[in-house]
Image (cartoon, rainbow, N blue to C red; front, top):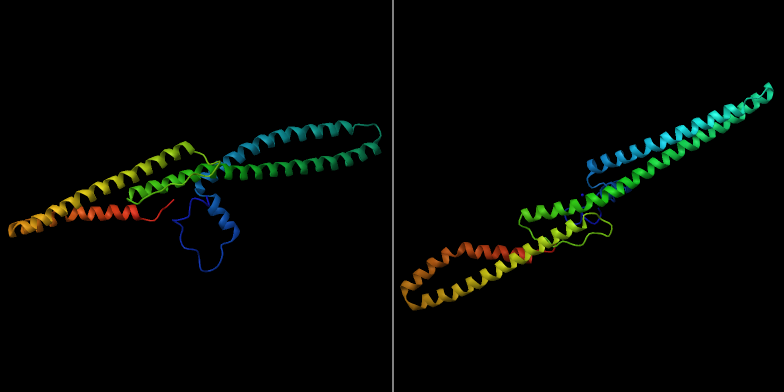
Length: 226
């Protein structure tokens, strides 16, 4: 399953002051920490092993060439070459380790960003499903450009709009029926005392329908939640 996906269910901001930068980063990009950390580490581990293996064989060849270059009959020259080549080998080793650390760091960053594009939409869809289960209205917004599951999200969007339209249709039909019945009951009350008693009884029978109409009206008038 993003800064754009936690606008309405967030707790109120802390009164102790602004949040540290690293906490904002964790909240914005690590939406599902377990999932994202797991797959980010797998990506970094795979890349680190592959690149580290290549570097190992490269460094092994460098040392082998250094040993061959140091073979000479002059002892003093051989000692000097060994010292210089050892220093060069150490420099190469440090550079290779630096490149390896840089690669792993980049893979971690890429992994977090990539999983964020996956988890963000899932998080939003999960929120919408929870609101639908609770009977609350949902008015989905478009996903950000680059997010995954665009097609799935569009289907969820269409489903939410269809549910909203269905609720509106049910409300309109029920309101029309109750209005018509109210007119008929008023007419019945004017006809006779017996009709007045029957109308009063019918109003009690229709109480659940009026409550249902009020609930549907509240659903349609609820503030937009994206």
